[in-house]
Image 1 (spheres, rainbow, N blue to C red):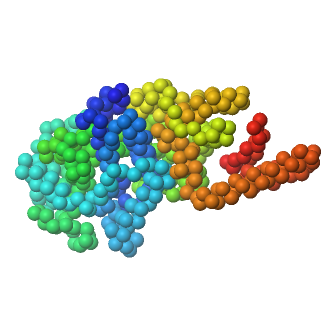
Image 2 (tube, rainbow, N blue to C red):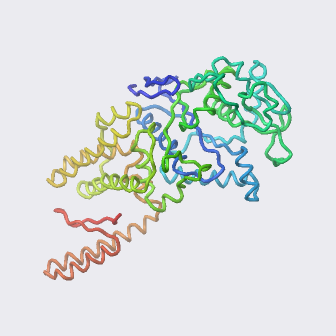
Image 3 (cartoon, rainbow, N blue to C red):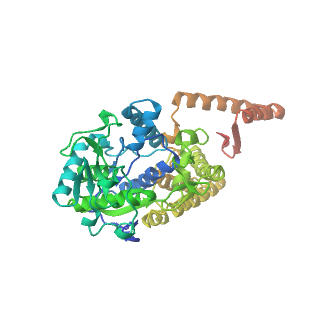
Length: 466
């Protein structure tokens, strides 16, 4: 295949060659369910959703794993502050994450494992590391010995001597080196008893980095194709994942991919900074498909500055594509996606270049609008097929039930369309008898209700105002 991807480890764009012919294995770091997701959280889900769709379009069978971190210090602290069980707090926020993924049209993962369901696999990996001399127990904790692994720091190009202490536990005095990181954390009297598991080293719970290595190994094997996540996860999370997995004997991932941040006021969107835009809130102000377009259209490795003006501009751009599709369908009927334009395919093959790919979609929509104006139905049908095919790969096809129905009762949609058509028939009858005042009154009433009427050579068409 001709796909090329930017590999963070190589610091270069590389030809993508799957480990096994016809198959692709992907692991993408999911969310720590300490709270509901903001749009910075879901950008990774959307970026890798587009990559997955592109791989699938190319005829590859994709196994896509996205984990859920459902126990950690922040979850325990926030649950305690709210006066609820930690697992209750984690699950309600996991549901919020699932709701965000679904409302933005991401395909469900092949597997979505929870950390708490994979403690045996984590204990097994720790045992391998201890046996190989790369981990040690101390006071009920177990730490990875970074100096035992000479390649530590290779993912992010850092030397151990230049790194700050891991600071991932309150028992730093137990470590051989302050940069050693926790694989297992001993149970503390202040923690809920239910947030601990029995191990050969005593009761406790897993360290964050260990969870992903163990789950990736279980579902994708010792070696897999792509590991993805946000840019902020490169260090220490992904650096530690790679070190512990390879030290345990796994080749681990062959390509590292990282998406850029969503910023607000020039700062990375973060719950700890208090500068977030929750998905549940944003989709009450704009349609979910427009938010998806806003996050998918920029290159996945770029930084996106979140502003209402930029969101509105993206919405207007998407509506131009949507308007062409709907007008074309009214003219020539539903045309299934046709062959992809070569320029679109070339853009996505070039490190998933969505900006150029989206530009190709707009170019074909403009050509289609010209064909509509000229009454060239054959050209309209051809451009409709091309535009739908491109938007389908991006998860943005306006005729996809995800967006076409908007989650509403289709009967209500049919009734609404029927009532508007009835009003338009009354307007047409008034114009036929030259009662233009009555015709204008119908149009004004529809405008007041948010219905925009456009007179076309094939008759009036309507859509909701934005």
